[in-house]
Length: 133
Image 1 (tube, rainbow, N blue to C red):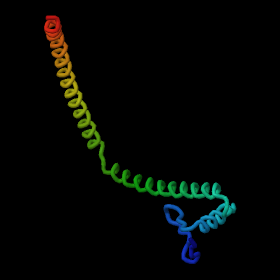
Image 2 (image 1 turned 135 degrees about the horizontal axis):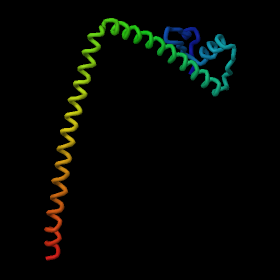
Image 3 (image 1 turned 90 degrees about the horizontal axis):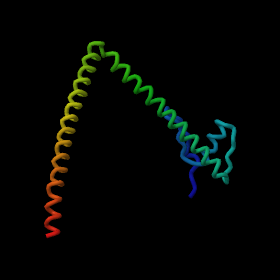
Image 4 (image 1 turned 180 degrees about the vertical axis):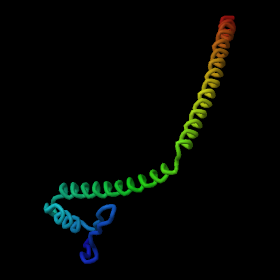
């Protein structure tokens, strides 16, 4: 399979670098690092591709971090101390309600376990009697 070298090019974007052929990758790496990667050196080429991938991911994460920081700063600016206090009070109320529901379920489970144990002690002698008889 041959590639038309005139139709391929290196594209640098805000997220990183995009190459469309191995030759372009080799040329780009040589221009950025001064290291030449031979055609018969798959290990070095794999390493170079990995480094390029890491650079692209780091650029993408930087851009997303900037965007998220901007969104959060805008959201926080609109909050007042009173709104934060009300939100915290609501969270405490929900936590108390959840704790009460948990306690109620725990009491029901404990009662049910007691009934189950009692039924075992009642049924066990009956089963033994029926087997022995």
